[in-house]
Length: 446
Image (cartoon, rainbow, N blue to C red; front, side, top):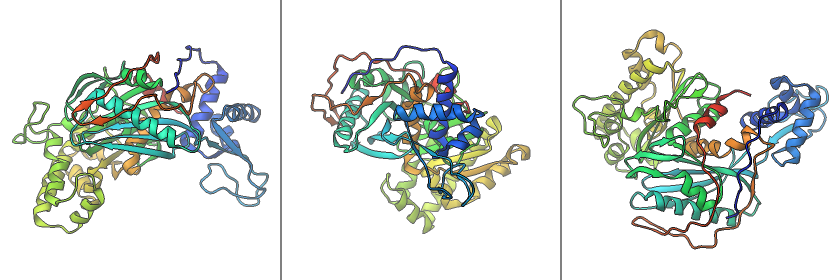
């Protein structure tokens, strides 16, 4: 793949800062009229015109001029029919993409996500056992090569974001512990950057899901929320507090899957007894239902039948989940709790029962505004969150970030097997970067 030389660090000038504000607004809330951009940023019209023009020249946004008196459905700030001269509509460029990656015990997924939020294309490599970190790097690079080679429309790549089910050190993207994958102190960001020539950031998968749901999903516009994702690698948690991701000293905050919920529970892989992810387990639920682990629709169908042997498992898991949420709610005081993965399916099945049980165990004042909702982004939630990491440099300073124009596939054949790694490391110089500062930067409202 084409080499990307890291851009020099440049101090933010007012122009750069305002360009970033406009691009972030279009990225997160667009399509949006130029008039609405002016209103929401507080900039004057001529400054907005100049900034939008610069972003258009850079190919980061497109501008459409509606016919007089027309309206644009879903466009923020669009005029009512027949009211004045319509303001141009600014849309983020779909052909500017971030590479979003999720790593699970049974599959690696790579997607190209447009700056407009569209998932343009994706590829999945399934395996019978968890990949090693080296195998994951080669699999990601191979899938990416295939995507860019097979994409008819040229794409410019901003960066790569990787979501991993484990604790990820934010400074350098080292996975400190991902027990389900069998990874301990495994670098993922640097080897992938060297392999692809692109800037790479890695984060915990549930943290990326929490941010995505806050920007685009069930927690849109909410400053305080908890996100729980249930998948093949257990239960992960992410917390947004005061509109900022809660990361902790080293980026490990939000490990809600290891919240204590049962004194007589099952021993967890972390060494403790009675963790949430052992007491509310996707494997246990799908085994009782007799469906494939990765088929949420089939699980929902079986749950709707309310078979006694399945309902007994549901009862145990709802009790464990309500206890864990009670603990988290008293600590964080969120406005919204978002449940993703199989937990979202479970929530849809039991209705308001989880919320009722949580309220019964909680201080009334803490739950006055509480809402528990399924993830709105569905299967794309972790990809959308990972993409935000990939866009980080571009959104921080669109005047300095360098985009790679549709790199050619690497000149090697990459394979992935569950038990063997084929590794090729070209001479690259790209340095992975931390998502800790990125998260704080992204949490600032435009």
